[in-house]
Every structure is written in C-alpha cells, then in structure tokens.
Image (cartoon, rainbow, N blue to C red):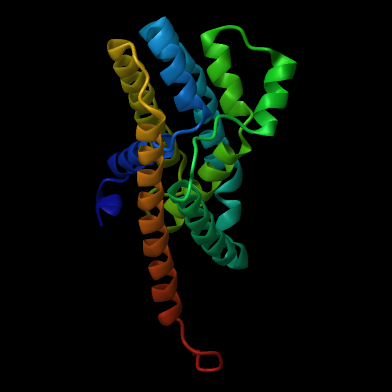
Length: 228
C-alpha cells in the first residue's frame, strides 16, 4: 500500500535497507576496511569504501536495468522466485555455519594480480569488481523488489532504489571506517564471526518468509483443469 501511494520514498527505503543488509556479512571489503582503517586511519578506510561503493552501485544499476525486466516474464519469473529462495537459504546457512572469515576468492585474487591496485579507492573498486556474487545478489534483489511491488518497474523508482542502495552502503562503509580508525584496533575474529553468523540468521528468516510467500501464491492458484 505504501509503495502504491509513495513509490519514490518506498523505493529509496527498500534500496537503503537492502544496501545495509548486503554489507553486514563480513567479507573481503569489510575486512580490508577494518584492517587498513585501523592501521592507516579514517581517510584510507573511507576511500576503500568509496571505491567499493562505486562498483557496487554499478552492479546494482546493471541488475535493475539489464536483468530485472527479463526475470518478470512468465515461467522465468516463477523460476526466479525459486532461485531467490534457494540463494537466500544457501547464503544464510553458509554464514550461520561459517567457522572462519572468508578473506577473498579466486576471481578476486586473479583480477587483483592483473590490475595490481595501489590506491585505496582502486583496492575497494577492484575487490568488488572481482566478486560476481555481488552482481548475482543485486539481480536476485531487483527481481524480487519489482515482482513484490516494493519498486515499480519505471525508471524513476528504479533510480530511487539505486540511490537508496548507495546511501545504505555508503553509510555502512563510512561508519565502519570511522569506528575502526577511532578505536585504532580491529575487532577480534570471534566478534567478526559472530556478526557473520548473525547475518546468516537474518538471511534464513528472509528465506523462510520468501518461501512462505511462494507457498501462499501457489495456494491461490486454481487446480489444473478447474480454471475459467
């Protein structure tokens, strides 16, 4: 209802909170900001975050403009609903059952070896660019936001959601850079692991809610052969 009356604010809030949620799991970018911010100060950590923010916004924009409309078509849309549920369930279990913090993946390492970023901004930009999971996350998110009516399939609301994503991610990276530079000490691995497990719980709750929505939609469909 809120999305129908105030589509722009609804899209911005949807993007803002999804951006925050996307940042909470402790991955390579968060670890880089934590380590470098504690060692080299707020500006360095913030510039790493800015580079990551720019690349993440690009991935988010690609998801909304290049993929979301495709996933709203018939059988593809239904398949995407199932893929979204499985994806959130997989991530939730992965984070909840994690025994250590993941620092990087092979794609990131290969891209960094080739490009060899030296500035803080470039480090953040390249690390997100080398993580295809970020694009997949936003493709799944964009398809779900539009199919549920949280973001209308128009340029204005899509752009508003992307702005919200940028604000949410930017706030997280800026706050993280400030906190670690202020304390001049990185959080313990145990604390970071607890944060990752907590994000896993949130994703599992979201997966259960999404699965319940799929079941509800199926229950409203007439049995085969009984349609009008």
